Length: 320
Image 1 (tube, one colour):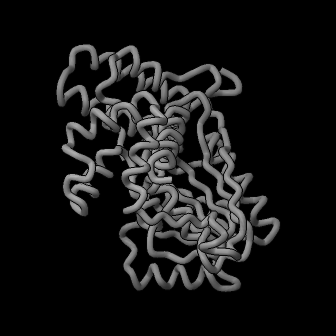
Image 2 (cartoon, helix red, strand yellow; image 1 turned 90 degrees about the vertical axis):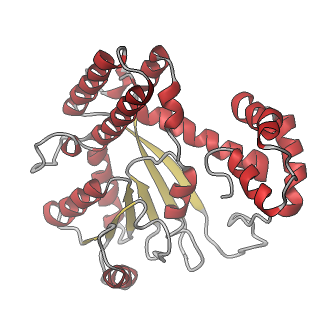
C-alpha cells in the first residue's frame, strides 16, 4: 500500500513525482492530514482522492477483473485470555512504569514508554519471552494454548499453515515446541537463515510430504516467498503497520493458491493488543478513504490517557 502510517507519506511521494501537486507540506497537513487522520473528515478525503486518483493505479486481489480465479480469503480475529502468570507479569510491568514515568520527561519518558510497550507485547505472546524460565512453554500462555488447538485442527484435515511472529525468539520457541513437544513436522525461517537455506525450506514446504507448519519471523517471511502450499495463515502477534501484515499474508494468498485461505489474528483480550488492533483498523480505513509502523504517537499521550491504553482489564483472564 502507498499509505502505510501517515498521509504525509503520500505527500512526499507526490511531491517527488509531481512537485507542487499537493501544495506545501504544511498546507497539506492543514487541508488534509489533520482533518482526515484526526477528525475522520470524509469530504477532505474525497477531495484528496479526486486530486491524486489520476496518478495512482491500485490493483486489488479482490478485483475479479485483475485475477479471476483467486480463491476467497476468510479473515478471523481470535481472542485469547491471559494465563495467571501472564496477567501477573503484565500488571507488574505497568506498575513499574508508573513508578518512574511521573518523574521522567522528553527522551527519557519516550524511551520508557516504548520499552514498556515492547515488554507488554512480549508478555501477551508468552511469559518465556520476558522471564528467565524458558524451558517449559506448556500451559503458560493463553495464546499458545489457542494456537495449539488451531494447529491440531489444521493437521487433522491434512492442510498446512504459516505462523508469523514479530519476535524472532518467539518464532524459534514455537517451531521447537511444535516439532519437539507435539511431533508435528515444522520448519522455521528467520533473519539469520541464508538465502540458499531459505529456498531449500520453501521447496520442502511447498512439496508433498514436507513440513505441515512453517513458522517465520514477520519480516523474514513477509516478502519474496511463495508459500501457496499453506491455506492457513496465523499472525501470533500484531504489527503496528497493516501493510507489513498484509505482505506476510500474501505469501499464501497469491496467484497459484487453489484453496480458500483462512487468516487468523490472535489478540489477547483486555490488553494493549486490543488497542493495537483498533489502530491497525484505523490505518486500513485511512488507506481506503484516500487511495480507494508507527507507535511513536503513544509516547506523547498524557499519563492518564496512556494508562487507559495499556491497563489490564477484567476481561483479560477468565478467572482473576
